[in-house]
Length: 172
Image (cartoon, rainbow, N blue to C red; front, side, top):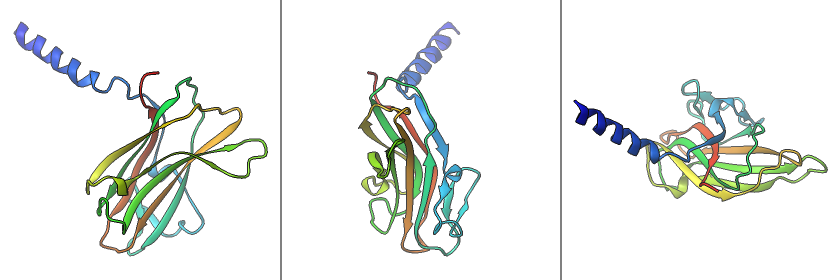
């Protein structure tokens, strides 16, 4: 019995240590992001968290996800999306997330901070993709948002966004 308990404790230690630095600074569900004017009537919710093309709609859907303030001296991050792209690296369907900052004072042009693109990753089903970036977040001087673009050329393609997040990339 003691050996079983020790084996279980060791297994739990191994599985949790692999995720020791998965610290989420900000996250949102796909359905919590705001659709742009052209997207408004062309998408629906697959479930309470996941946005997708509505019925026979094809083309591009654009959502803006406001990044809430968080405090961290960290500079190493990852941008993560949980999504589905039925074409994998095929160019006819994609899920792309781009993190921008824009200065609060005299801010007219968003500056790209980090991005992630499903066309750079081959899995076809529901999956997660992360892309590292370095940045020192400054919410006093900037506001941040993630723009997510879902594209499909055919109704037979499936493109969905479940969540997008900013997480600590590596221990600093």
